[in-house]
Amino acid sequence: MIGKLDDYLRFQEAALSLRAKRQEVLASNIANADTPNYKARDIDFASALQNALKPAAPAGQMATTNPAHIAGAKDAGTLADGTPVLFRSQIQNSADSNTVDMDTERNAFADNGLRYEAGITMINQQIRAMLAAVQGGS
Picture 1: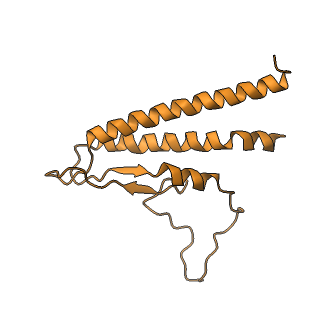
Picture 2: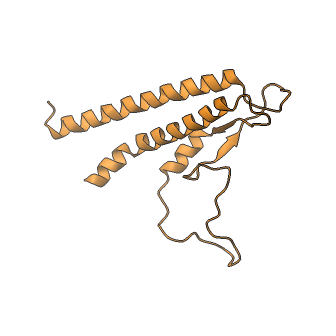
């Protein structure tokens, strides 16, 4: 029963988690708008969500093809859960080589925030529907 509830809410859980991480990346871009040589970053949300919804690999050691491979090395271009963080291409030239465009960042930040709130609303509706089913539709 619990497994089915987890499956029912897994999509929204994964989407909300990725939206929260994307919000942090976008906030970092806004905070570093005046930092010389800072490169704006973002997450490819669609592919990250597809990866998050794939069945998890069995727990244990990472498979290697050669005994000389280094185990467990973390890539600097990923978040803690392995979500790749991509760099944005430069929209306008700047004297300090900073690629943050504040209009783009503000729009992405607001859009992501709205989508996060929509996800919260969807999960609330799913929980209400489950409660109504358990309580007999009242």
